[in-house]
Length: 141
Length: 186
Image (cartoon, rainbow over the protein chains, first blue to last red):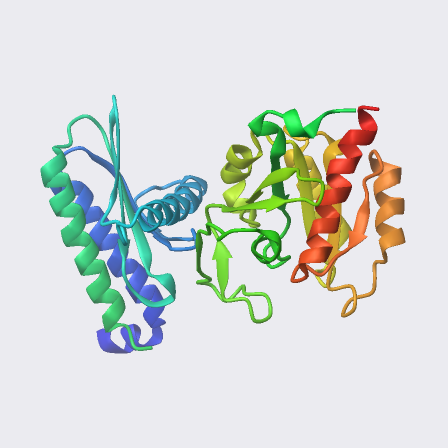
């Protein structure tokens, strides 16, 4: 029964639900994480722990822009592709990193409060990005 | 007459906007004297226009020296509404606006009005030109239709037939924009 249900669900939806699980786990397992989202490189929301769809869409567009701007800046200064963007403010940290893949790949963006520990946060973000990449690769083309 | 030679750096900032696929990145590439800075990424959702496979998500930047020695700094915006926050950032301190339009879209004059409205707070309508592309493939609405609709609803704005791949066409748009300002200051 279960396999029949699975076969009827488009692979893309399965992928999004897997992404949502990964994001939820990143949030629950990592100190300070307020929300976590995945967007396409051109700024469309794919999955997010944000409940408000409009918030998720806005964050997705800004994630796409900041990732592209960061790439332009490192490229123009001879540094190749950036590993991540870290924005630190008085009330928290935002980390944005590219997940390589088809059609420009994806961007993982994680927003935290003051409770985040930067080193642990970056480690968790990188591990999640690797899992996201592995999921996307497993999807039949 | 305003002396553009002595203009402050911000006075020479020109913003290219308009819907995705209208040719903002192409126009800036066509007319720029040096290598253009781009933030294009592959289009993910199949909303591509014709052969277009990439879209700007940050901004484009190029520089262009006009025949009269005036140097302009050209900024291209992303076209999609979801990047409106970038429009506000790029529009700040701009001196003129070029709205590029794809005449084969469903409501191109509506597109003009949408982008004029979005930038109205930052760039006065008197410093705006409209460049309409793909008129050969999609002859309607005509340039006259644009002029009538815009004159009825807003201050009249120059509307010019443009092929964004042609440097001369884009230069013409920029020259008209600069001369608009000179006329206003006479």
